[in-house]
Length: 265
View 1 (tube, rainbow, N blue to C red):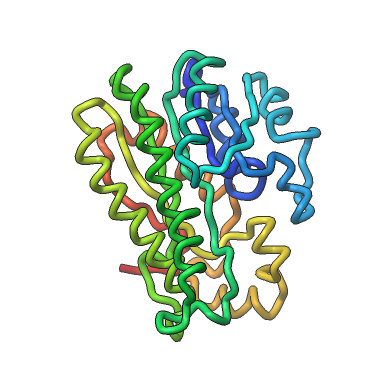
View 2: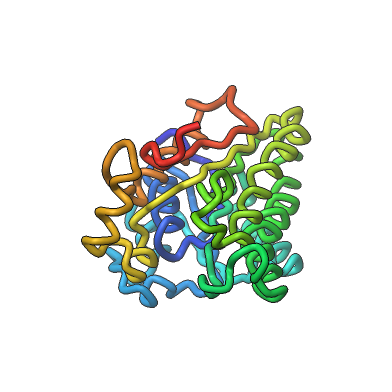
């Protein structure tokens, strides 16, 4: 129970990777605020919960939890979300910026083709949202002179995709990685560690629904991965555990690739 007495906020926490982070933090003793634009998002991709909601799953682990539906690309909604967290729990110790993803047509995502609306949308949901949440959540952390922030990037922010597809997403995630470094430099004197994870081919519920677990796709991807398997949400959650506990007290401003050896540099 390394996180007993701590309060964590996970954005995009109602399903998939976010849900894995929520449950891992709760299992370590933290009370968890679950944020999502739709707190019933697990139903969209057929993800089975062990209770009616993710918040109920946390409560079944003996921890307190509330759910807050908020669009984290809206600064005012982020402010209200953090204030609601402070009103409910009196503190905020851990932020996991998980909200985001590649939510745009793939076929028009090359550098010379991507339309302005896709660029803005992908930058907003992946980079701007993380910046807003970090800015607001860092205020109570600075006052208490302790905090842990984990931003979620992607291997796409480190390695260009074949033929240049998904450029706006890759640029946004590269921005998350560099923003993490800048934020770590500012917040380090306040006892706040800021780090980043960059997952690769993970079997999240959305990825499975989109075909990542199909035999042909799985075989093609596994052949590119040193460990010869696709990742599970729990593989990422374990690294988040490292970054929010005392195991990483002297680690800040870093990006950890959770990729099984897909990115080897």
